[in-house]
Image 1 (cartoon, rainbow, N blue to C red):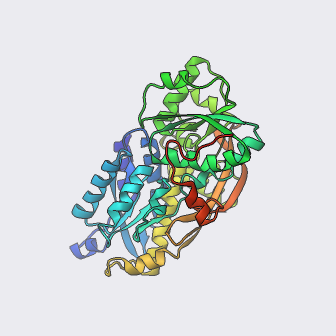
Image 2: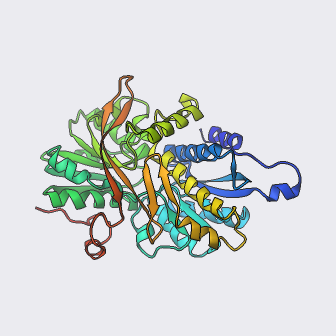
Image 3: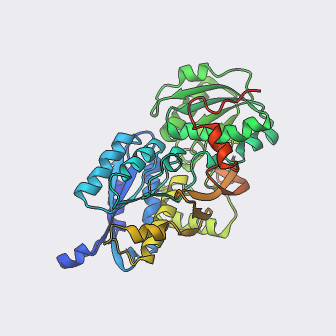
Length: 416
């Protein structure tokens, strides 16, 4: 699969031909993508999103042909740092699109401070701390963080679905902590209780003991899993004959899971969730993006609808390209003028308007959804409602948000 993806990248990217002088005019962009490990399907679809964005611009930015240099990661911070150093030190890039995973993003934020002439545009990672704690002046994020993707879901689950008591199962790293944090802010304030939190390593194969420990007296289980972990959990839970209702983290109900093989995914039908996209949103710009995605790749080389990762990489590239066009793709000053323009970019994106705050973090739309089965049997996320203009403080004052503390295995508490 990875070889096929690399071949597709090579076919998509326009490589400058001719003299050495012409080749030097290429604009090289390093792309970090998880192409191994539990989040591989997300990384592959993220690259597809970037490919489409580049193709729509004719393979050029400000008249300069673009070359993507793909650097594979496995969702770990160390793999992201190794890949980034290779891109900067060997490939001599000044632009990096990525990474995808939450803890990778925190590591890349810190690394970016050591290479001030390199601009990093986060492509999909969602840990809150990345742009909230000691933000880097050359790190930009055009997607919401994981807490922002949960805006409004807690209240919806408590009031509309009637789930008063929940258990949590999530991967043991920064992004799921951030998701549960954002969910709990609304859910607990509404009156809900989180009575148990089980954290599992990224890449868990055996969920037997976790499933056995789910309390019998909860109304639903919040699943903060993604990619291969999501599928493994559902397969094993289905084998137990369990009947629990679920609340989904943003990537638990993503097309990377809903388009997976097998029937276990149908356990998610009826699952409420929220995030940066709604598969079945009846908006002209979103529908045009879905069509562009479907037309760009054969049906067996993509998902039924663009994943959250494809959409985020697409938007991140377009944000980067818009800023570059403002300075005629001139990075001769170390990218200073480019970064000044990039901070002012506002996108009329397929999933709603996006602008950056003073910490270069997106202010964007959150979509509340429910998993349904479509007429053709595919699973999709039915649009319920939007929460517009979500900021990193989730509607709280800066002081009130700071007082809550940072996401962790236990924070925030959720007691009656």
